[in-house]
Image (cartoon, rainbow, N blue to C red):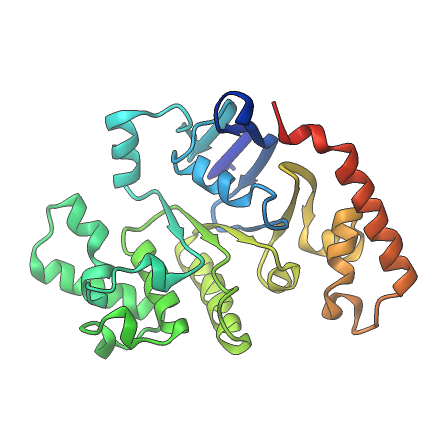
Length: 287
């Protein structure tokens, strides 16, 4: 099966002159149709930069980014705008309150992408908004409301509904549950599972919380200081992590450890090992 998203040997450098900073260093990953891949890493590891590279929002120094078999990393100008307009890839941001226009109703938000494409009458847009709302179990009586009138979980459902209204092949979710309470977090993750199954969506789920991926992701990619240090099925990553950074992440999640408290000495040793890796890789941050 052809990968829906195929990132290979991706290098991204930001800044200019002596302020140039290497963010991604030969990163590679794939997402297949109907697959949820978790991308985990600490703040500053390059997760969001990778997502922006897929969308063409940052330029790659080298490497390739292909969506559904089409190389998109080199698109510029009108070709890039056309790629974004066709909606094959949609992005769900961490904070829906900041990503949703406070002046637009839920209805206007849900049909925004279709309206930009054109060719849809008001009745078609109305039905499309209803369908998108139903897919995420959003009550239809919320359609005339504004984001400020909704709960955090409802706003995140609106953000997801807006993304899927244009029938994307790939959904990139950047920390979609980090700002939500525990019960709402579970609801949103279950929603992603349902959309994957009913729409054959490929999902790249970006997070710094390994525990959020346990019952959702098919595979996990671990990003550390701009490099992929480990990848495998969720079961492999949880039960037999190989890289010190991954092992440190796993020991921080009680449910993964069968609720056994971590051994303090082992945790200290892991932290020391990770600190040693950080010191040895300081040259990665500059080019």
